[in-house]
Length: 99
Image 1 (cartoon, one colour):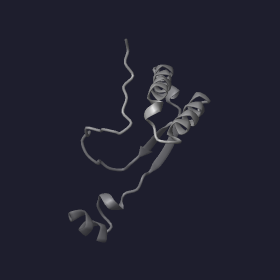
Image 2 (cartoon, rainbow, N blue to C red):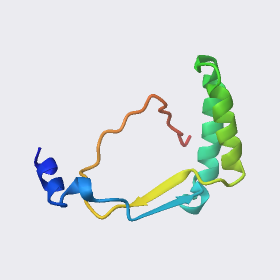
Image 3 (tube, rainbow, N blue to C red):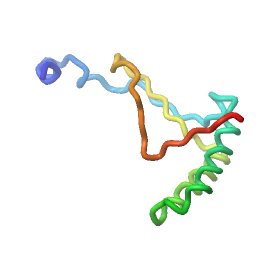
Image 4 (cartoon, rainbow, N blue to C red):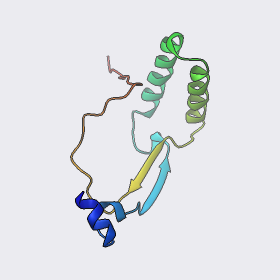
C-alpha cells in the first residue's frame, strides 16, 4: 500500500524503469557453456515423451539457435534493490551434474 502512495508522488519502486537491457550468448559469461548445452540437449531428449504436443519441437528450435550463437541470456540494469535471493523453482527444472 505504501508503494501506491509513493507512486502518486512520482517516487518509489513502481516508478523505476530498467535503465539498460542486453542479450548475450552463454559462452561469453560461462566457460561451462558447451557442457550446459550438452546437458540441455540430453534433458530434452530423455524427457520428450512427457512433453505436451509441440513443446519438444520448441525446445529443438531453441537448442539449434543456441548452437548457432544466438543470445539466451537477458541482462537488465535496474536502478534499485528489489530484495534478497529467493528459492526459485520452475516447472522445467533440471540439473547438469559434473560426474
